[in-house]
Image 1 (cartoon, rainbow, N blue to C red):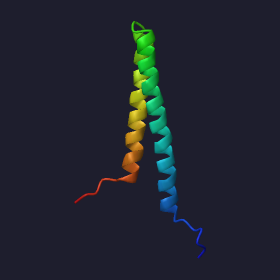
Image 2 (image 1 turned 90 degrees about the vertical axis):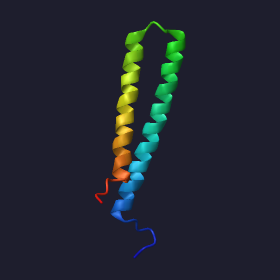
Image 3 (image 1 turned 60 degrees about the horizontal axis):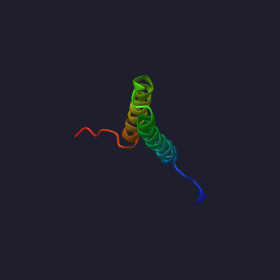
Image 4 (image 1 turned 120 degrees about the horizontal axis):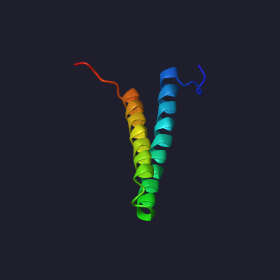
Length: 75
């Protein structure tokens, strides 16, 4: 067996971790965008609401992938 061999489940974990990293970065950037937009346009509730919904969707995606790495264990 080659030393470069990575079992399929580990490859999947690596891909999930990459996706999580990207989603967390996007979440942080969106948080900054929300704060910046609020400072410049506090009365623009439509855009702020849209940005906050996007942030919540990202949070849900992050939670989904975190659960893929740590599946529930039935005791």
